Image 1 (cartoon, rainbow, N blue to C red):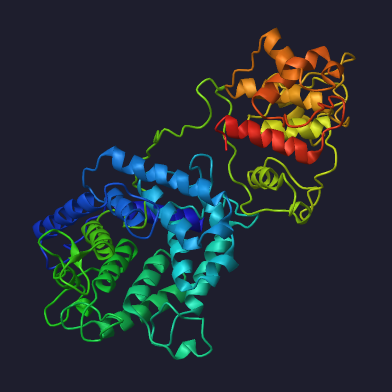
Image 2 (image 1 turned 90 degrees about the vertical axis):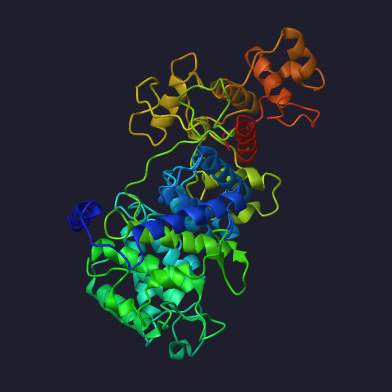
Length: 551
């Protein structure tokens, strides 16, 4: 009920009337935004995943009303796909702030971060210890990312942890790291005497932005203390001191304060950018920010030349100022227009069955103690990461164990992302068996058949030739050409010393699997009737999904 009330309040405020946000006129603000946009479009023509030259430029443009070609966002989306492929679904191979930044940029661009080419980025923020270890900066960005599109909805489960619990843990950590002067700084919590340190304007403002949507009395008190710290720290020019000089203003700091007050303007109308507490010697926050803008539209930092990082932050701060008080704030993105991109990396092959889908990353970074030096380690870890195959226990995979027919039906249907079908087909597959849905689905899509007596033999061990037949049928669903001539089948299998042992019904499938290197053709024997090992099945399915553009 509290969640529903919060959403209703937010929507009620989205379109409400508010007074002008600053002493700077709307025309001056619009001119500054357009000039900065021109600089960024000239400087960042191919946005990439990164803290500079990509994510924040995309974020700023997506939250502005600047007319940007779809190709700009498509280029960024393609870079996100490359980033996800390079990290391989392992959240240990990158920083939590990277994922938070990408989530914010994609959400702003109209992409649901829970399904980015089949990858759920929200689950990448499921490890509180990992996030907190990077410091308050990481915690702040994780909270901003989860709140940006109500990704903290109770229906979403992160690693079996309701995100409202994660949400609360992030808030508690930010509150814990608030300094006695009311501010926050980048090193809070890392040294023994960190509570004796002083706050920094930019990080304090970022913390306010993350906390702004909470109605918790503790949070409101913390924000009031933080605002007091910022007001006392503001210079006569309307800006805030840099870490390098206490007498000179810093462009990024004033930009972040503008963003923070913009976030508060949505939930607490008394906060405006021309709030008397933030007007010093007649100078407002926007007066200070615009003093850093160069004739080329960029913003300088420490020299007369325009700086890309400073311009990105200044640009989205100007956008936040334009939005403040009369529409959804910079970081609350309920008003985004949903987009879908075709980057040339489409899921699956052109002729794939329409029900075939790429499996989402389910458990990032999973591995098993008994595959450390196994040749199929990559295949096993990738499939396990996507929730396609499981270990015998949480710690062990048992690569040398055999696999049952039911287990194979389960991993093949998960691998293809097929929707479930329930229809009592086999006498020995009861409706309440754990594998019933997978077996019925595999049968529905023609991946498996029963035995001559009308049973499936779910607990029977699957042989190499049976696995090859099922993989070939799955490959056809994936859009692969599985047809071979009799001559091609004969020539492909002739090199194996036991090819004649293979059943007639399996030879075409075996030949296909060897032709596509789904089965390793470097061995002398096929061993068609030998039980397949769990590691072998993982390798086969991994190769199939790779060749089908489903991984």
